Length: 241
Image 1 (cartoon, rainbow, N blue to C red):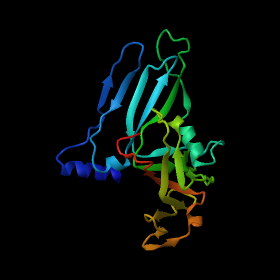
Image 2 (image 1 turned 180 degrees about the vertical axis):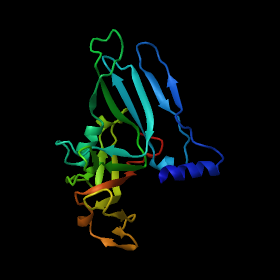
Image 3 (image 1 turned 135 degrees about the horizontal axis):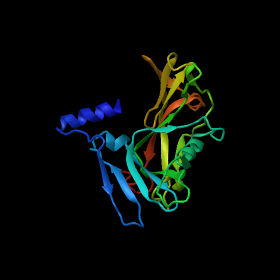
Image 4 (image 1 turned 120 degrees about the horizontal axis):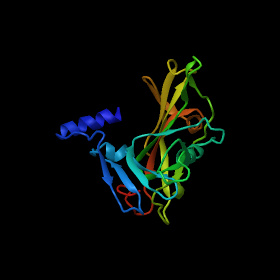
């Protein structure tokens, strides 16, 4: 929906988004080549889009990919994941790519390390907890009811950033969440909890909107979480990491 609204805004301005268009920045042999995804900004992308930087490195970094993201899709099935911070660390951890051939003279031609960091943070950070998975056993999509704890205030720590900031905490406040009720993706019901600015939490259940206690908001079965960035000190959050 956000992508479609972004496209509509661009059409109203007489421009269009750039699809599958990459800018390549070639450095010298000792530095990595950088592939950067081109995109046309809008008033909506300025709010919801961030950027991530992926680095592939066998010995020394040789390739960096910078591309925008609207949602971070977080794996929660790993046994080490019990909180949102656990899932973020798993997402931005180092992964081994089996079968990847980096170069002819590299000793191990079957693997390479790939790590992803945050290049730019959005004003509204959308986290999707991947509670549905397709099973080849014939069960189709199954739901994981695994409890995942999430905080009211989320701090993005320096080790998740491509360019760590010094002497500044990056904080987000939870302003909305979506919950799926039911055991299957094809059935069930969705509700949303929304926080009024400096006000109470409200439960949106179809046409019914009513106040809800914070204890009911911070359960452990959330499906989508929306965090708004808090400005710290006298800095302007826009245009910064």
